[in-house]
Length: 460
Image (spheres, one colour):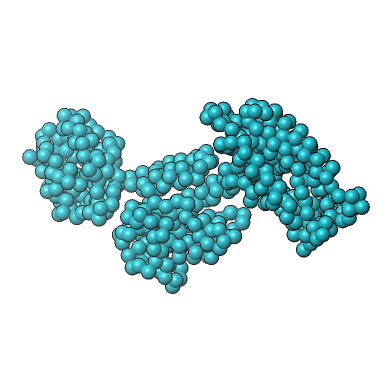
């Protein structure tokens, strides 16, 4: 075998190169490596010589590397061939090779260039693009965070990944998303909430070593082996949450690049959450009555149609109640619109308290309400509820610290007896509501009594 590097002057020259020059025999053993091997692979020249290529190649790249080695040994020069090696400290290093086979010496001569930083930059750029794309495309926060976690996990040495959201109304943290390789109750992992709280208070990204924050003396984990990195989710309203990652590896820690990546991810998550909350508010305005919080006409139509479809499919029965407040105009005229609005809100609450959670109570407009009762076993059940509502409204409201009676008239329509469409059911219920109102008016007290201010009859 020809010794290609026996000349001391040549080896001194090769040792000046930033790239690693390698000589590998036909069995894959390193015969020579230049001095740069220690900065690239973590091994000294003495440690590497005698080892095989397969000893150091990343397990996932061994078969591919072996095939390329066979091609080189067959006489095909290889340039810009990339694979991964494992450094002495266990870290992955990306290598670009140029190699050729020496038939005379029966060795492969290769030059290895460390392209780890370039590959890392490419991965980060790709990750940033995919994260940004996902944040603007995916409306479901859980699915979005799953996608982000899968991307970030390949770039950040983290064993735990947590999203904490601060509830300003309740003054507490909740954790809609967490992934932890070791802790089943990841959201309760020791150290998550203390760091989230510090991030919220300081409004900045915080990096911690074992036991304490690097920006102060606050102990966040109670542990001497955990490394934490937390980035704030900052919106126009302030810090609304924190994105936190955890590492248990003393050798890993978190670099400045990891911090920048997490800050970018936090910004994208903030955008996604803000968009989600905006859409929720818009949907709320589009489907719910602003004053009472009840479903409006649009949402009522949708629910009623779905209820009819279910009843038709299951050969079931449903009831529609048309509820109208008898003296609402008089309350508005004598007590003012603010009192009228308050009475509408109290009426909505009383109607909700009278029905099942599965029933729909909607505000049709003005002082008119609709109740949809699904899954009725018999007509009598609907009448029982009508009587219950009438009984509830026989009791006075407390309005401006004064008792006020506000009776209602109710018209009922049944599916399928009175109709099989939303329009026909509403028409029948409306007609019967007016009939009930006329009956109630005929049973009222004398005209002199009617002229009394609203609520005065509640005390008689």
